[in-house]
Amino acid sequence: MTTKRLDINTASIEELAELPEIGAKRARTLVRRRPFHDWIEIDSLPGFNAGLVEEIQEEGAYLGAQGVRTDQFTWELEEEPR
Image (cartoon, rainbow, N blue to C red; front, side):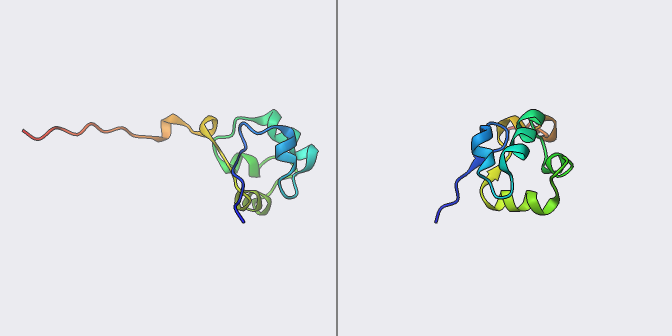
């Protein structure tokens, strides 16, 4: 069985509600508080906890492009060999 990938930052309320233990109320909370940059932000929401976050990750939920902070990357230029 293939796990369906679901971007927390772009999924509809209906799609989010289908995740285990999420339902309509938690799905609305997720949509109102987006975008998420880190799973800790979701863990700290009312009605969420680390166990629930882990469970939805195991079901294919992920933080997509809107959830990526560009400041976490360091770009280094390499000198070309002479």
